[in-house]
Image 1 (cartoon, helix red, strand yellow):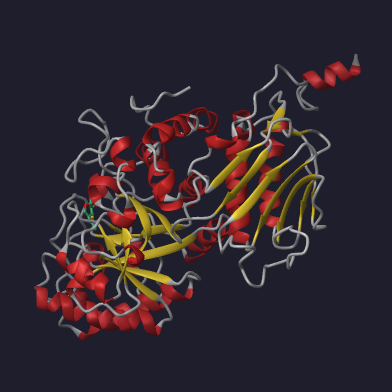
Image 2 (cartoon, protein in one colour):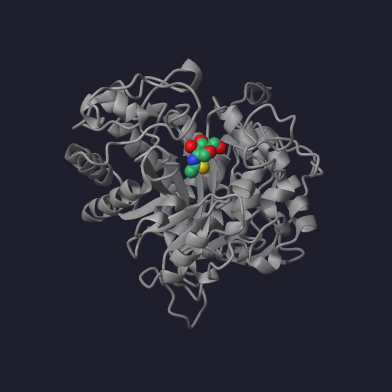
Length: 525
Ligand code: TNX
């Protein structure tokens, strides 16, 4: 009688209920390189399951255990003993006898590269192997999608907890798979950014571009120019609350992202999109007069004063502080829509800013407008046009500039799905799920050689986006479609198979509380 009471009080995991079919091995988004289901080899997570890792896999094992402890109520101890063959293991190396074993140093366990992994599910064990930690994280994302939907619940569920038997061998098509969040038009704090990081990591996105400044708000503390954040960060679109990241906030975001194999790419937009900075410091204006703060949604009206020396001192200090707190290799300098800067001044400005970024040890990323200047050999251009041709971008690519693909009429997840969509814009078109999925990043922009494409980004501008629920409505289900274009081999591209796999994500989003758009193009189970 005592045991019954304890159980009913929730002191022990809930008893197992009806059988649960394992998630099929071929239901993963993005589609893996190879999937080989094996009948009779399902694994079952139980109260006795132990997670084993080597040193490199410890945090990855802990992430899985954290997820499963909440929903199963099991202990799921993590042992850093490098064992495989019993329980769930995350280890570097090939696991092939006669092979070189650990390949952490070389970063390439038998062709898995920096981000590939091999996942094997057998009756008594689940093993994730990779050449590098990034591969283990990607293997975890796949394993996560193979867990029963109830694994994402915040409190103990009945189970059982089967995982389909077989093997997945996988590696990305592109090294750069990104999401952008505009925290300037509306501010999103550390928790909201972390929530989005968790959501995009499930689809193997490995960069998060934060649009940290624009006309409506400056969102990162800079010690040498403190009014940028305290004054320039006080506003947002429509008079909504402003805000900014302290340096400690920013470091927390970076650490949280890094654990999920995500590199933060900070953007300070210039020379346009700078009203918040110009309002904060009168001396940055050509006429020495600070404009008022701005809460509208026009673009193209502001410009840093390209002819004043203090502009470059300012940028050197801002970029210096930003570079110092950013471990990733990139600083995004914006450069878009500089309609208020004369073309010659624009080119001279960009040509002066690139070496500043380089001097602080970082690689320049810019919206593709920057190819109208003279890109450094290392500069990366982010294509955001609405046509599949751009002569300047093609010419730059032929000379060596590499391109991140975010065509606005395919990849801009701030666009409406259809005319009734309550949020978002439509200047680049309406983007239903099949449109977001229906293009090939390697063969889209005329005259751009396939090997100059670094990958993809799904930008989310936030003029109309105020809450995490809003972010989720725009990102899901389109972000997984774009993530698949960035990850999966072109040979797997198939709308009818994709819409099945995408539909199978819906029940998990429901359990997670993700406010996704129920596109009528998808059969949601
Ligand atoms: C254009 S695309 C912009 C942004 C806006 C967006 C709205 C680009 C590089 N700049 O400033 O927020 O349109 O969709």
